[in-house]
Image 1 (cartoon, rainbow, N blue to C red):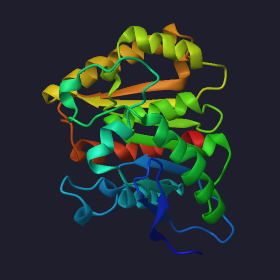
Image 2: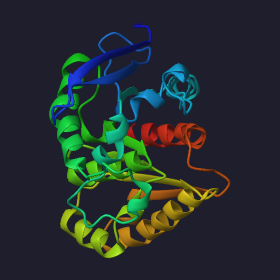
Image 3: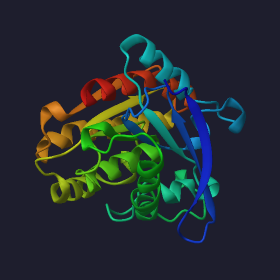
Length: 262
């Protein structure tokens, strides 16, 4: 048996922004065993209470509990955000004109396509070459919250051949109009799409806006041909837009992904 381990290292990020820290948690596993993998945004918020002022998602505890309860586990790959560039890096440009610009800082400029390139061309190949992860689509997930939830959804739509499961937690779908979403999705939906796990709360003004747009997406997906059995929606009205809420919902997302991957 190989013991669990949390590793960190850096990889070169595009746009001359230097090295980006990557966190990888490998749960205990048998020698030569390959595990499902979840690629996640906001790596510094996932593992370590000391690494962020916002609190941790405690993903290690979630994986350990799932492993103890079901025997299933996953490698978690967390990619640190770009601090003041975070929303820019996690908001694609190609979907449509940006709405709600008052929620973004003065240097905001959508460039989610750059993060997409970093994830698919740099991070994933490195992980697959150096860690015990499965490569089949059904065992590969991407997950994030807020702008990260939007970017995770985008990754799933752009790479439906690579990701079998998407975690869109409090996703910033409201950044684009319904018409822009409809046109984008009609250009992407095919017969081999990933499963989409959507979650949202409703306990503060931002989360209320995001819940409305999550409901919009829930109704829009079947309209554009997305199979009804390939997405779900979890709404917890008492939850606000914060790490505490995402820490609460992550174990259910993890369990759902691993159950379907199995």
